[in-house]
Length: 231
Image (cartoon, rainbow, N blue to C red; front, side):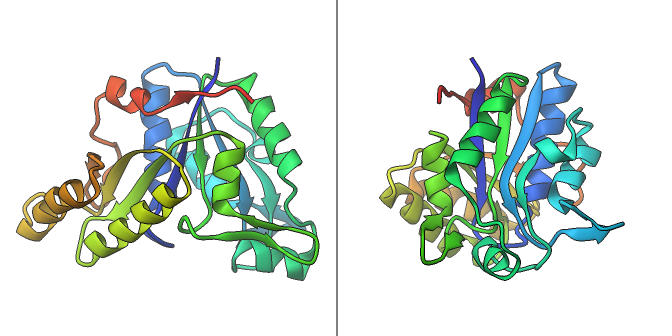
């Protein structure tokens, strides 16, 4: 049975895609049949009349994943705004049934699927006169637990606390936190790691230094955060 995890972040531009790519790279290098999925991506670049999902392309390049771009993302929008607004501008609003079907098709191909969210955890995916879909609705639809990517520096205690409390309030399990741009020589970064664990009760399972090309985590520990999912 396929296993999955959902990667979210404390906000935009924290390094969620970067860390996701390193996670998948680690799995592939260890011989794991790993796949990637993102429900909705906005801010895609148009090339020769085709929208290219940049996050998925980055993950594919860095990780070496053998997966076509059109199977990595269900909804791709050009406007660099929240998916709900991009859909309101461009059309083609997100349908939960398509997301579920696309994810199920990947379960037939990959043993471990890493699902990347859009922006932070509080992200409107569809808001119109027919339906309202938030990012956590997709997490629940796919029956996934989450990993949180956060910056290692100043202000991260507050942002991690808020993110954790929101996710917990939605009844979604948190499997761990990964600190990006982590400087192990910094007393503040080391204290942030300690305080996050103390205040949230959630472990920091890895720290990623700025520009690092690999994630420093034991493969068994990494694989243990993925849950068996049956849809």
